[in-house]
Amino acid sequence: MIQRVSEIYVKLGLVFFYAVNSVKRYKNRKSTWRNQLEITVGSKIQIIKLLEAVMPYLVHKQRYAAIMLEAIHWVQSQPRRGRHSAGTNYTGKNEFQEYIAAMAAEREFHIEPEVTHRVASQVLQW
Image (tube, rainbow, N blue to C red; front, side, top):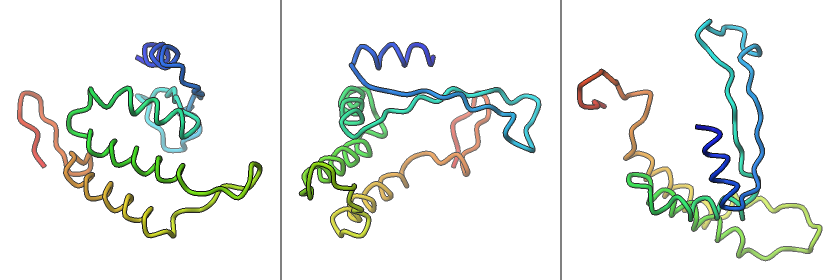
């Protein structure tokens, strides 16, 4: 699956990074745990490309992704102090907080792993 995802990212022209997360670093690991391969998209521009590519295929989380896209576009529209200036912290701005609140409200309607029970051949319950 990771190979297929990386092929899609290359076709989309996305810049991405990967890392192996070894289970050896966990003290209380179980014998059934396996190493994980993590793929990370590195910039806001790349995230926009990825979200726009997957939006037509999202069903339940499409609104969540749309809010995230709006938030990224809002951050990009903010004035910069110069080419080499440090990144600005937007977490204190009301507009940014509204995007965070909207994403939190949207997330409430999704299945949460902590309260969802999966039993074979039965409907999900939460």
